[in-house]
Every structure is written in C-alpha cells, then in structure tokens.
Length: 82
Image (tube, rainbow, N blue to C red; front, top):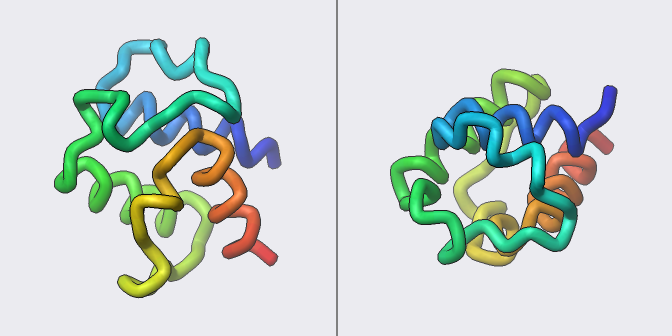
C-alpha cells in the first residue's frame, strides 16, 4: 500500500480539493496553508484515516505538528501502522 498516495486521496476527498492534492509533495504545508483544513476538517481527516488504515488515533496523539506538512501526516500514519 502506498501510504502517501492514500493520505493524499483522503485529503482530496475529505477537503473537497477536486484533485489539487495531486500536486502536493511531502513538503507541502497543510495546517494554516490550506483554507479547507479547519478544525472540523481535521477531525474528519482523522476519522477517515482511522477507517481507511484500521487504526485508532488517541486524542493526545494529535497536535499541530502532525498536520504541519503532507510528510508529517504520512509519517504519523506510518508510525500508527508500525
């Protein structure tokens, strides 16, 4: 499974980016840079990540650093998968 591709797909789907995520790389900033990524969207992204990757994300695992860039979000998911 290509985790980065799946994470980008989730971002595109949840944030209704209409394919914009195809141009994102690991250094693309997320929180504060993408207007669609507000606090409610963060919750939706986390829920979708949990469903898609069959993981559980605890509240204390999430902070702004996880959503800093595409790469930090991908790294977080990889860490959850072991």
